Image (tube, rainbow, N blue to C red; front, side, top):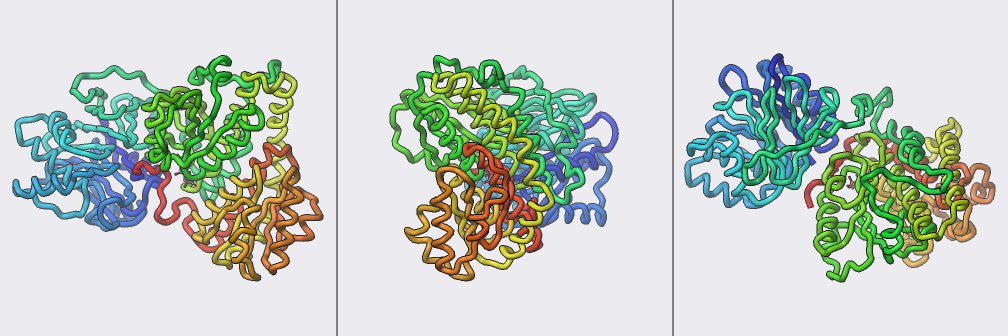
Length: 616
Ligand code: M6R
């Protein structure tokens, strides 16, 4: 939530590269944006409500002076409505300290009252303006800029990713983090800071990752990290393997569409190098340190995640149950805190997150660790908080996901969970090498099967169904067993980007209430692919038809029985049941995309959402 970019360079003007980085971060929040520079002895700030395009128009009208130092921000409102006055950067009332901030300062009203008593004036509704004034206040108390920032932060309760620039300290940026991501980028004669690595990939792939409560002093030639007590800290560089091109649209009209089309490659990148064909097993990298013995000792699994990652986790539970015969439960991470504090015993907690920065998920992970449990993270972002704090890690190798509606990350997570199921199954001797090889081969063949989902006839079916769906107000997605989480995910995709009300249900539940909704204006989207649930899904279709409901069915190519019952068919290749979610999700993602496109919605940046939800 909210995006920060900052730069200080030995030579030249950093405005354009900071703005370019900021645009890469727009998925983190887009209700206002701003930039500040230091030039000719003073701080200059421009801010505008709305998307970064509005800020650019403002900068055309009222240019910022060229500068070798700049900070910028794109906002997802927490305190105060989206408005020019609430946009960041925020500057103190003496125009000495300017700040960009992600997170929430919980005690800002108390701090504001204290500062008001000392004569500070405020012009916004935000917590961040209070922080700018607090730092400015301490800067006048015989403290240098770094000391003033640390002193101010010692008074703050809440979370922050922060960059500070001062009129009296040219060429210095102070950065800080607590429960809100912040990375430092390093290049020859240049230092950068940003909320996410993709914002800086056009400038560097060499990073330093800040830990909670650390601060850093950045100049054009140095990056010094300090712990909470102000002692310098040594930190290894992280070399990011993402490329700048991966963070661009590459000819597609939207990131979401590009990311849907990337899924066959995600399959290859997440899985194929990890196959151990002779053993019929999977080899993860060194961050996964669980031994066969340890895997054999777990008696239960607990999966935790939010949103789309939760749906992937639900599939993981089913896969692990089937291939490794290990029981599990899947919890919404935000609910875990309220669960009874039972003995962790022989439970492994699998925490799934694309960003590795979701506040609810991180909080739950830390709670498990506090209770003495072990956490395996499944995550897409190297160096993210989850990737660093989980006891073991599987990276999904999806490349940066920019569309707010998650697609390829789900695909990568489900693929990784399937690999984990094989690894567990082999370690627990539930699968022999032959069976393991069979499951690996199924995954290898899936890559070719996926082509069918992108053929013109398949895309045309999606477009026809989308044209109909764009005219309805509400619908149900139904699936059974492996397709139940896919139904949930299909419904989430549709509501996120088209704002059409949609709910996912296990199909068996329909008769127990939701069936009351069905009439000729109320459609269901049913996943009716081959497998143990097939006949039951056909019965569900009949029940809907009997009440004149419209049916969009995801069905195997050439399945006439489903076609005879449905109004629209989205054809998918027939694949093994355990892997079917990876083919059925594709037309549902495309369906949401086409509906949102038909309705003229902002597909990559849907209203009220942000890519990475870093507040609880
Ligand atoms: O980064 P995470 O996977 O932890 O994010 C979890 C959810 O916030 C995320 O999946 C969200 O639901 C997406 N908007 C779904 O498209």
